[in-house]
Length: 228
Image (cartoon, rainbow, N blue to C red):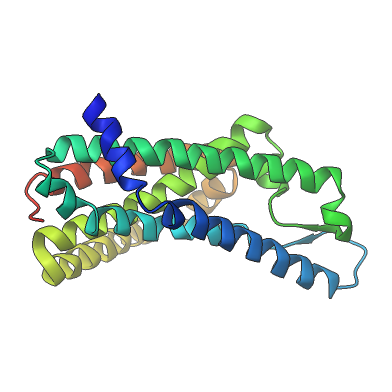
């Protein structure tokens, strides 16, 4: 357990990368969104998508945590399993903290009538209308999904370099194409659309959670044979 915690501490050597940059992105996003809200003189609520900007940074953090820290960990004789558990454990906690922060920002937004401008970027009815559990679960799942996409992409690069990324990208495109072909051949686009629009934010969080498990499993298997 101590070695797993030490891996998490090793990832946090450069705290500015893990905490400073996303906070700067968040503050800049809020300020820019408020400026845009102020420029739109309408009486109805205005909804912006700026809240997603800091979450995309977790994709970069997934890449960063593998490409820069993994070689260093191997020099310290840290096993790949310990590195994986320490890194993922750190991001589970970090992502949860961000999800809670987004929930609190949504509460502030609601209490201030959209920062006094009737503008909303965190308090989205489809997400926050289901209560605190749905709100936190949705943002947590989104953050973890982006992190694992970055982590597995970087792991594939370490294992198979550019050819591996090309094969993985083509395989992902073929899977999506196969799903679209299946829906087309079975003439079930209407049913698929009806199913999709009935999904709640909690339901989407559950599906993303399933993808996170699959991505994590794939990342670990790839990491076992990756070279620093």
